Image 1 (cartoon, rainbow, N blue to C red):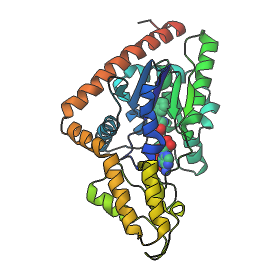
Image 2 (image 1 turned 90 degrees about the vertical axis):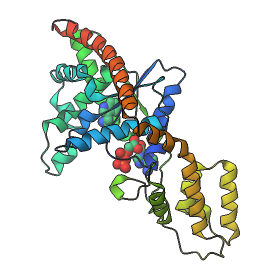
Image 3 (image 1 turned 180 degrees about the vertical axis):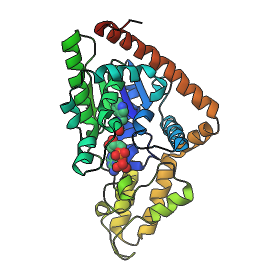
Image 4 (image 1 turned 60 degrees about the vertical axis):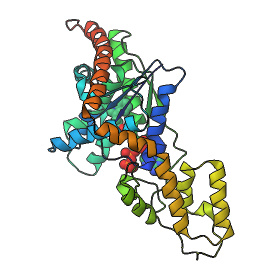
Length: 326
Ligand code: ADP
Ligand code: TRP
């Protein structure tokens, strides 16, 4: 079983990203049936939105790699690399493009939504799913962990692979989406779903003072300090549960119910719990960030492994379609 996923380098990850996605990606590196796990930073895809600011793109890519490594991605178990370091994928994209039917791409959300709103779209956005198909197919991926929003792209990948195999004979391995658990919707500082687009996020590696401030800003009701409170109706407690053991949760819940505790105290408990939960990751991140050579070595070693695998697949494809075979 080969697992593969791409992560867009779009700014600093928040608690929702961690509990809803990153943690699960990383856990796959220990999957008992895993043979290979490939994780890449999708910088070519990011080019469809981060444009005209090369330094921003470079920094975002580096940050995304640091985040994953700090949070537990182990380069001895999983292969981490930059998408653009594997030119075989862009070659495969072209070949796939020649057999991809327009209607498949016309129905893809990212493009369709823009079209419907009358926003001009680039060819890059239109063909985004073909690049993603090449990403997946270039590594003979079986399992593609993604959020629900990306399932459509994995379906398109299967359609493209099937059409290719139908025309040229069995060449490409059909992948399956592995939808990351959506049960855990992490709430933001306003009690709504935590999301960058709502401006209610708490970042994993927020600087401690700012973290404190953000936590202090979590919306609570106006029950006076002395009165009993319902932990299950409070965002501070809901977030605290992400970090605390069942015993710790029960202890804080009992204090809510007993009355005499203000929300400020619960916020302090949340701050301490979050600092302790991400403490090691924070230290690892700082150490790695101070050692850019090691980070680059990890990415380059990952890219070499990824290129070797992708070349195998590209050779198969070249032979199948009648290009000079490598
Ligand atoms: P945002 O909404 O902040 O833009 P993204 O759409 O980039 O976040 O999300 C990336 C991944 O993080 C998705 O796969 C999604 O499953 C997960 N995720 C984001 N926000 C949450 C949340 N509040 N709760 C659970 N998972 C989340
Ligand atoms: N499009 C994905 C996203 O926005 C990122 C991505 C690019 C990806 N290539 C991939 C995910 C291949 C899985 C497999 O989240």
